[in-house]
Structures are given as structure tokens and as C-alpha cells.
Image (cartoon, rainbow, N blue to C red; front, side):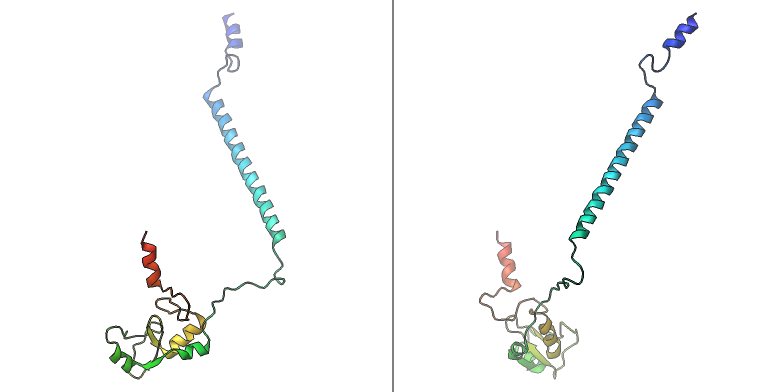
Length: 165
């Protein structure tokens, strides 16, 4: 008789204890449901986001692409900058005259015609710097603008101001 009373009260659900195996299955199912919910929510949010952007995107032919074009110097300004032979530049500024062009990296010859940029006094081959300045309005070395401006702001003047706090 003892056997029948033990079989009725000895079940897992009857005494309130959940075994370790049942607990593990419950946690696993919960994690799978969480991952599935996050994946589906992410899918639907990205799908809605991409369809929203495709509706706002203009047709390719209606708007031409915007290009960032940096305006260089005109020929009149270029011709106003001084030209000199390397042999004369070497004699006048022995300490500051470079021995090669910073654009093409070729060594200067005494017969090479150079262009002197007004603010920074950097020298370059005439053909090299003219081509550069037609595309870019700044010195290739120090990035100072050779254009006359009311306030000169070369990099050498801006950096000390930024370092003083």
C-alpha cells in the first residue's frame, strides 16, 4: 500500500520541484524567443527605413551631382607674381633657397625659371606652380593663400594663437 501513496505524491509536479533539465529547457526557449524577437524587429525596422529613404531619393536625372570644386587663380594674378632664374635666387637668398621643386621633386638647374609666391616666399618651377595654382588657390608647401586678402592668416600665425590658452 505504501507503493500507491508514494507514486501519487512523488511526481515532479506534485511536490513543486522542477528538475534541472526542465529549468534548462525553459531558459533555452526564452533565449531563443528573445533572439527571434530582436531579429524580426531589426529586420522590419531596417526594411521600413530603407523603403522610406528610397521614396525620398530623387531621380538621378533630375539633380546633377554636386562637386566640390576649388577655384584656383586666374592668369592675370599668376602673371603678376615675380619670376626669376634659379642662379639669381640662389645668390640673393643663400639660406632660404631650396635646392629642388617641391611639386615635381626635380633639382633646380641654374637656368631654370622659378616663380616666387608673394606671402610665403616659396620658390617652384614656373610650369609646376602655375599648373598647381590654376587648380588650387594655396601654396603647395605651407597652404597660405597668395591672393591678397585684408587679413593674412598663414598657418604659422594661426597655430600659435591656438596654442595659447
